[in-house]
Length: 125
Image 1 (tube, rainbow, N blue to C red):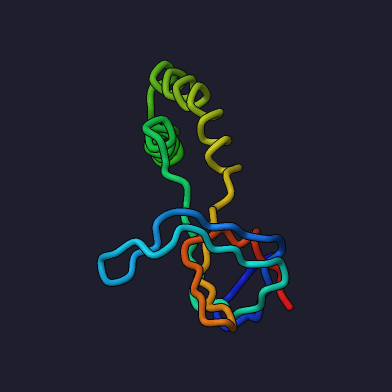
Image 2 (tube, rainbow, N blue to C red; image 1 turned 135 degrees about the vertical axis):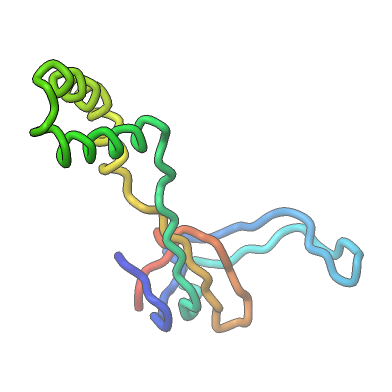
């Protein structure tokens, strides 16, 4: 499911948040539970793309070099470049298969705001 700003959503499962709750510099609580079905509106959607590794960047660089100038290279140089590109291809393929992680900010009807949570926690209404 793809969420977007303004979409009405509900929590797909019970959600328990633990940790200190601070009000005016003093700890006042430590646990909040929101039940499945709690409704709210998506205020923001953030897409987090996977970071490329050194191997991925090197693959992109060498592949571009090969595609742009490979036909002009001496045969042995071209063969060596093709081997390097081939050796880095598994890292490139794995990078391409990674899905972006999507987080959302949802303002619930009861006034609570949940920010930076994965979109999988919600269903559209």
